Image (cartoon, rainbow, N blue to C red; front, top):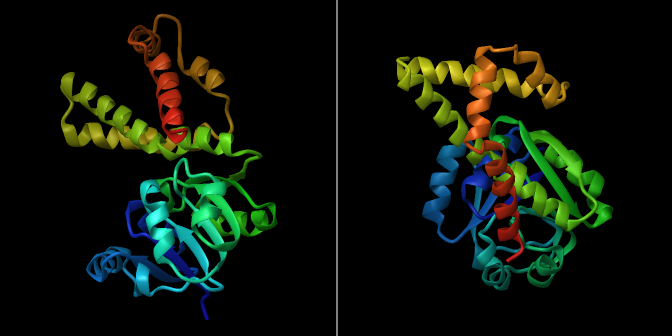
Length: 252
């Protein structure tokens, strides 16, 4: 019989993580309205247990908290009981703030990303060391994990891996637009770019980016011309600034 895992909140992140865990756990979801949970169940594709905040008791539960950070206090006041394990994906919400608002024996901050739905999340975490092994085992089901030594590092990782799918989506779209501008059909541009991202994701695991770049860039070639255009456009500094700005938001 499958162990139950409980999601408090029913947004995109909860759905992505649940997609990665639904074959391992029985899924329970707690939200504001049962109608929204019906939609969650349909999108997830498996039967779930449903509860609303005011009728749910956390006693002894394994809980993944997926509400909006601004709603932490409100949701905490409406939940009953004490969870055994609390895993929070709330960006910027400290372990201290979590413990003040959600009663649990152990608390861990985790930051997965939307790639969890296909088992390829990069999930960083920190919190009560007693739960490290269990946290790593749980989130390995949706991709890679990395336990970090401080909450500051988790906030930095949030700016990179948590928000990263949005940044890469922008670059993907721009590459497609560039190909279309030069005369390629949109559908073909998307297929070519999809292939690029898929192959690069595997290749970069074992090769330093500078070595990979140098291996592609031949003297006076196409890559050198395109690379120079990216540098001229400030892509490198824009990426660095993006991480800084996203990290700053986690500190508010």
